[in-house]
Length: 279
Image (cartoon, rainbow, N blue to C red; front, side, top):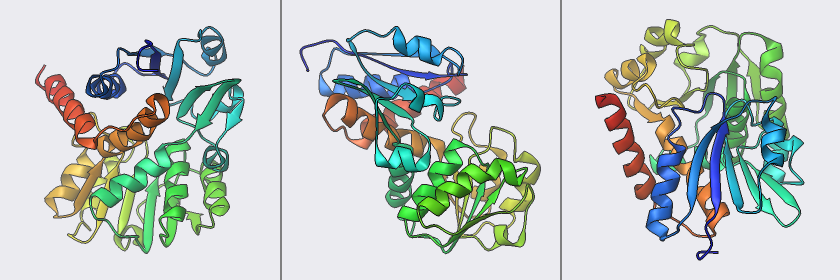
């Protein structure tokens, strides 16, 4: 495998600001692989045709929104984890097609463990999409207590709540507003699109404390108003860059068969972000 040039890429819409090319290329340099990793703007309507047009040089794909649920349409095999979560962020070429995997779940857990975060008794998750579903699966595997899912409607939260049930995790819909549980939760996770929770940032951050953790899956622009307020209040902040590098570690191992130190990915991502901010 090392002697053959392979193609990998990140797909999504939008995808222009993704740091995946930066960190995967850094991994290839570290491993001495003459591989290519690109980014392609692909939405749900063009996804199947794009996959059908890939030749045998293609080894793996990273999937971002809105493709994490439609990935199963092209997969010939699916991991148990991806199936139970109902979302896949990775496609790996297999002998008979594409294998769908979810590395968001182990990436989320690894990011918390790296910061020494213990299993929380109460969790508040903002957002009800595919990333929220992965978070709820992670909370089940992390042996966390109950989770309150903040979504604009019960219907929007239902898919994520179904995932929680599949993993034996207690979760319920809490509505799109700050509740008393938000001030009690040891862990708050923001999976909502950029700016969606800005109106609640000051209220949420008002309850920040050294023993309480915010995991904001956004990494650009950074810091978000919520993360800035939380940090100012003395709370622990884990960000989307932590999730990005840890889920990518698993992807790189699946794609190349080799492991890469997390520092290689984090250093490349932080340098790219610093350059982007400076310009």
